[in-house]
Image (cartoon, rainbow, N blue to C red; front, side):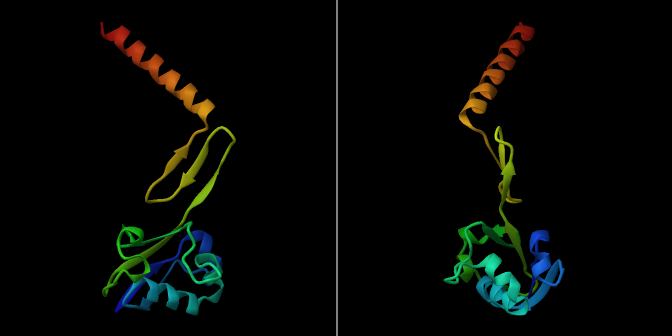
Length: 132
C-alpha cells in the first residue's frame, strides 16, 4: 500500500528538501521507518535513542491524531496521507504561544491571565451599561 508522507518545513533540510514522499507501508510505524531509512538524518529528529517517537512530534493519518488511534500501529491503506507536525514553542515573557496545527494553545502567565480576566469583566460591564 502506498501512502504519502508530508514532511514539514523545519524537517525538509534533513529529507533532501522534499515536501513529501511516497512509501509502501501497512502501518504508520512502517511508513516512518521507511521514511527514516530513505532519509537517515530525519531519524534523530523524529525518534529518541531508544526508538520511540519523540513527544513533541505529532503524527496524523488523514487528519486523525495517531495518539488517539493505535499510535505507531495505526493501520494505513492505499492513498492515505501521513502528516508529521512538530510542536513549536516560543514567544515573549508575557505570552508563550505553543503552535500545532491540530491544537494551537496560548499559554498565559497568571499576571497576564488576571489582567485579561479584569478586561473581560470591564467589557461585560460596559456591554450591560449600553444595553440598559
